[in-house]
Image 1 (cartoon, rainbow, N blue to C red):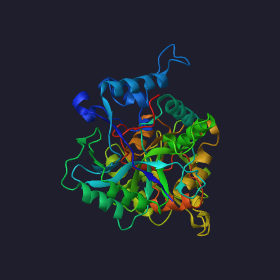
Image 2 (image 1 turned 90 degrees about the vertical axis):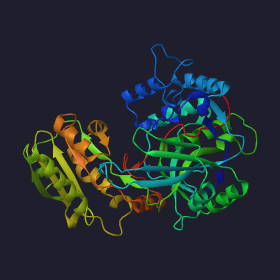
Image 3 (image 1 turned 135 degrees about the vertical axis):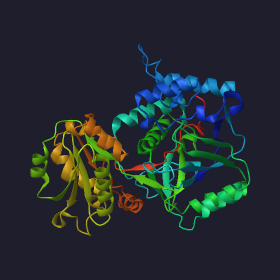
Image 4 (image 1 turned 120 degrees about the vertical axis):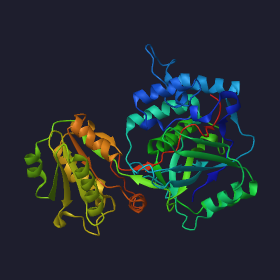
Length: 440
């Protein structure tokens, strides 16, 4: 079902450009303007200059951040800063990390996966499943970049089912005792390691084992749909018959059963006016039971911990949401009343906490499209609550994380989750391996 294509990866030559940690970047869609500038300033060959270049005054159709990225890519390859591997490979990749909000002494987790090119399939093919809706503006931006550079800089992150861990076990066996191509600590404190696996027999085993496995896109829906659009454009221009480099896209594949996989909630922070507490209760009281957690300046930290614990604990057996209003010294835990809970026969999408939050809370507190488009998002409990308390937002709407099995059920049913439904962690870095399709 899934066609894995070992490929000639293009990687930084650290002997030419220096330490890899100075050259990689987080995925473009989680970088703010300050982070973008900081990465540009960090190193003249940081991947940000290709993936998310800076706009300049006077940009036009022939001189803009996309065309400049294409020029830089050619120059870096010519100078030897980037080099294409001579043998086709699959790149085994591990990320050792501590989940956000865990204490400094908390145990680490290890996410294991591999970077490869995957043959593009239509999203209704039954081979590759999306789970989130996409937005047109982001796809236009990514299409402009791929047209200018003819390369994938940032991998799409997809999951596959492998309860026995056969594929990862094979990669671990073949790389055991060999030094990693890269081994470093990134800005988030994660230990990043990468090995190139080139043994033809091992590659064939992995390709054969993956053929029976559907893929579930975890992160990178816009990039996948953009790759499909680019493939369509190239075919329309009269490209040669037979398989072409643009028929595949760079992915990080990881087993959905991997204990190193973490899914975080994506909290909402409103920025438009909200009603006071009594107004919120009037709007939502028929649907939810309210539990109040009042606090003073002295008790705030302890009460916040109790509130978050109640949100997580009670959320195991019922849909529970958290609210904090700007200027109100209490946290609110809202439990959906039994009469309003979805039936077991309801579609997978409608049973998700994130769907219930959107339908029953967001739609009432922010009824217009303009208000909903002004919402901010964060994976961090404390950041969401602090934004509301400090005035960055008018209210924090907290929810529990979507489970991997729920995401799989939604995708398999052919449904889509609301925008910003999941936050898979840790995000694969951009710039470890590049899939250069052809030199522009």
